[in-house]
Structure formats: structure tokens, C-alpha cells
Amino acid sequence: MQPIILDTDPGIDDAAALSVAINNPELDVRLVTTVAGNVTVDKTTINALKIISFFGKAAQIPVAAGAEQPLIKPFEDAARIHGESGMRGYDFPAPTTAPLNQTAVVALKERLLASSEPVTLVATGSYTNVALLLSEYPEIKPKIARIVAMGGTLGQGNMTSAAEFNVFTDPHAAKIMYQAGVPIVMIGLDVTHKALLTYDTLQAIETANPAGKMLHDIIISDGDQGATGVAMHDVNTIFYLLHPELLTMKSYWIDIVTDGPANGATVADVRGAYHDGKVNAEVAVDIDAAAFNRWFLAEVRHMHH
Image (tube, helix red, strand yellow):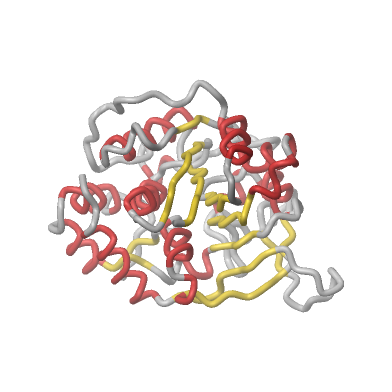
């Protein structure tokens, strides 16, 4: 089993990623922390609790609420994509549990220090909590096996022409994370815009079971839909954890732009011109989209509501 911690901002695709992670027997989800991103942190926290409660895992998986706003940059949400609640489309019961009585950063520090083995940190929102953790408690770095981060792009952004949403939300946090000396896997738009969940897959999960119906209903209300399918950005991180062989990776040094018209851009030193051959990230550049769809459907079929 891979021990993982999810730092997330549900959000529709985050909710789908969380659903897969907490139901997959190969992943040991030790903690879920929340951050402001798709919607405000009070809402992302409630949404994380709703998903964990939906699957009856509230007793096993603690949730800690994190940063209410980015480190420096003013906060801008994505409610226009995810709805006011962040998970429109399905009527969840109110969560039965409350978040931990400690901040995300303290919960992260304590869970990591208490772990006998390094833990993979999966970051699917803006990286504010991660940056605060790495800055305030650098002693936890050896306990982080790697950070698998949804965000960034080698090509065109989805928030501005240069920047992807998670990095754009808190570029200063992204810069701290990429400079921290912890192994990073960047799962960006280069693959997430390719691995769309097709409408055939969505139709199949709708009738699979109650979990599939819930996921179908929130995904189909996503504002990020194309002609051929819906981008499930954050789910790609979980796919990578379980099937790294189905993605193509390249090693790059990634720098983060923190001001000007390219604010939030992830700049790869593709020519190897600036960092003496050093790299700080494994970057996903291609993915088997058909396999992603087959895998997602299989994962949903195994979910117990």
C-alpha cells in the first residue's frame, strides 16, 4: 500500500480524485487537507467531508482545514466552473463529522513526523498549505517521498494564456514548492487536457452504482466540458500513482513566474540552458487516454457507497 496525503480544493475533479483514492485498496489515505481554490476553504472543507462521509470513511480519514487565501496574491475562485458550493449537481447529506481541531499545516506536520515511512503528498489545489508546511517545518522534508502535483503546463494555460489555474491561484506557493528540494511530479494540462472522461464513460458510470451516479451528476455539471469529454484534471494524479507506466515523463527544471503578464506560468528549462543539468521535477508529457477511461470506469465499479 502506498501511504498518501491529499491536499485538495473540491471542486468537482478533486471530489472524483478523492473518491477514487479513498476506495482504492492500494492507497492508504492518511489525511485530507483543504485549501481555498475552486471555492473558499470553508466550502472545500465541507465538500471533502461530504465525499468521505458518502463512502462511510469519516471515522478512518481525518480532514484538516487549511489556508483561506494565497500567500500574497489576492484570491480568485473558480465558482463559475464548479458552482457556488463547489460540487453542484448532487444533493449530498450534511457531513456527519467536523474537521480536526488543528490547521492543515500542523496536521500535515504531525502526520508526516509520526509516519514510519515516507508519504506521498498529492496536491490537487493551489499549493499554499504545502508551501507553508515546507517553509515552517523543513524538518519534515525527509518524510515526503514525493509531491505529486496537479498543476502547470508546458504549453498554453487555462487561467491565462500562460498559466494553469492551481499555479496561478498562488504562484508564490508554487515557487516555494518547486524550490524546496523535494521530489516533484508535475501532472499538468499537457496530459489532463488529453485524458478527458468521454461521454460514453460518463454514461457507463451513471448506471454502474450509487457512487457512479453521484460522480456522473457532479461531473456532468462541470463548466469545463469539451465536445469529446470532460477534463478530470485531479484524477490524473491518482491514475499516475497507480499506473505510472501509462504516462510519459520527462525530467525538467521548472521555474515559476510570480509577476507580470505571465504570472503563474510554469517555465521548463527545455533547452537545459540554465541549471547545470539539474532538474527539479518529473513532468508528465503524454498519457494513454483510452486506458485512463477504462481505469476510471473500473475504479467506479468497485466503489462501495
